[in-house]
Amino acid sequence: MNNKDRSAPSPSWWDVIKSIFAAALGVQSEDNRARDFTHGKPIHYIIGGLIFTILFISSLLMVVYLVTSESSEDTPHPAQKYQYLGK
Image (cartoon, rainbow, N blue to C red):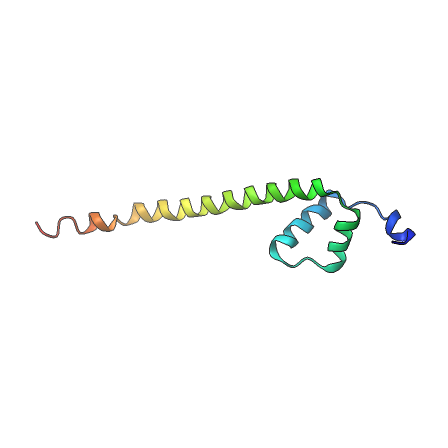
């Protein structure tokens, strides 16, 4: 490591957020990854990753809930749909 690497400032919160999103999508550049491992603090990435994971799973659950709740209002359940065919 040379003096330039040691004197570089640690990544800002915006840099940490961008790195977390890039890592989640799998498009992190080698330069940013090296900067994160050289100058970043692991706790920032761990906390950011946990927050991202919770928000991502929550958004998926919300989308599934919205899609299934709207479809259940429009069409009956298959068992209810054919319940009265025999009568």
